[in-house]
Image 1 (spheres, rainbow, N blue to C red):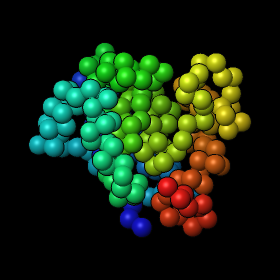
Image 2 (tube, rainbow, N blue to C red):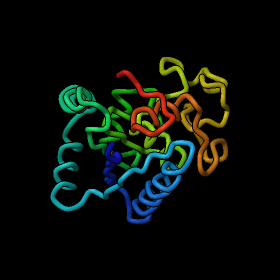
Image 3 (cartoon, helix red, strand yellow):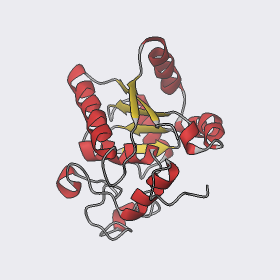
Image 4 (cartoon, rainbow, N blue to C red):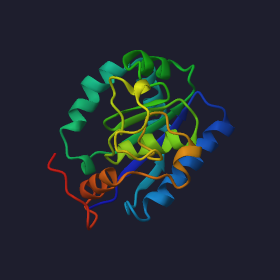
Amino acid sequence: MSAPIIYHMSMDLDSSHSQMAAAWVHRFAEFVALPPCEVACEFRAVESTLRQKLRDFLGKADMVSVSRDVLWTMSTLKLPDVPKLVVFCSAASDLAKKAKAAHPYALLGIPNGCLSVIYQHEPSVAWHELFHLLGAEDCYRRNSPHSQTEPTCGHKNCVMQYAPSLGLVGDPPFICEANVNHIRGLWGVAGGQRSED
């Protein structure tokens, strides 16, 4: 099975925040290739013409139309066949405002199939959203994330909890066994439990 390809870009961020976001992506690539996940991802910065086209598209689209018109079509393909995109932007950006309006519980960032938008700049939030692009599932109830006292997986340090922090999840972050097995199965890593999706 080929390695997952994850593109990354920043929108509406100064150069220091863009560099910080790129560093979190590179750090994720380092630890996700090691046990327990052992998925060797290929990360590519979005450059030149593609970057401008994506900026234009994401600037004009609302999250509902992105979900319905683009990602729905892409989600009909098997997960490994679809390139992924992570976008870092400011919380005040139009893209973040649209994401929060479409999904009010998403205070820090949002995954949407093949796209993750991150507007809270903290490494564990970035890693949480990047794990989504590999197939990890949230360890909280989306209808009431604020009311939970601990993640649904039972691990207080799981990166897939609601609003993770570096102090809670560590570096590299802890991810629960259910998500590890799911990711390994999706990406064909020996010992993973293949998903029937």
